[in-house]
Image 1: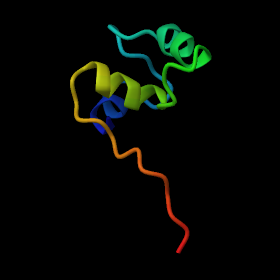
Image 2: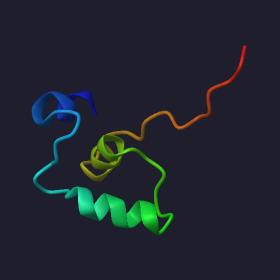
Image 3: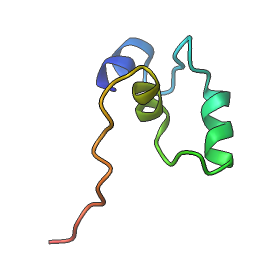
Image 4: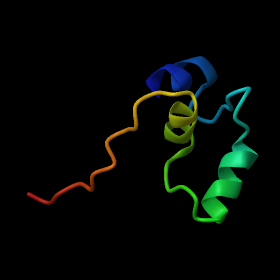
Length: 56
């Protein structure tokens, strides 16, 4: 995920995974991932840690 942010910037867009596709999936409740985490999954990267933060 960090690699994509370095390459395209935090507000950039991956050339094979348009932001509009991600927005569509978010709107249909198909994902709750942020854009770059969603791109990483689609590119075959391991799933980011999705466990909720715990209060200490």
